[in-house]
Image (tube, rainbow, N blue to C red; front, side, top):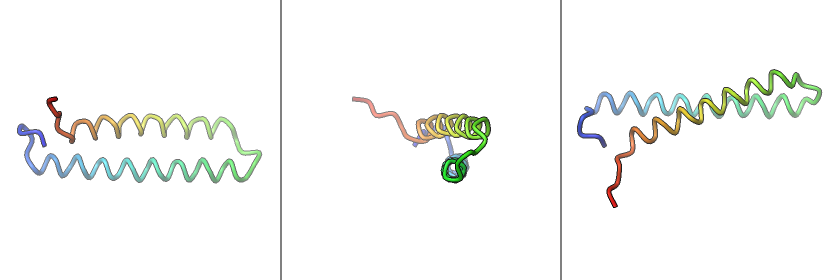
Length: 72
């Protein structure tokens, strides 16, 4: 882990990461449910997909922040 960050900060980042993963999973479940219904509002599905992509990007940034750089 980053030497400049204390354990409390790391724990907070891990908690946020877990929260975002859960939200990402919930969005996928909502998208799947809307698609299963058929005739669902395409605009709503598009908005959910966009939100899911934004969450994925945020998840990646947090994972990169938590994971130490490996010098090859």
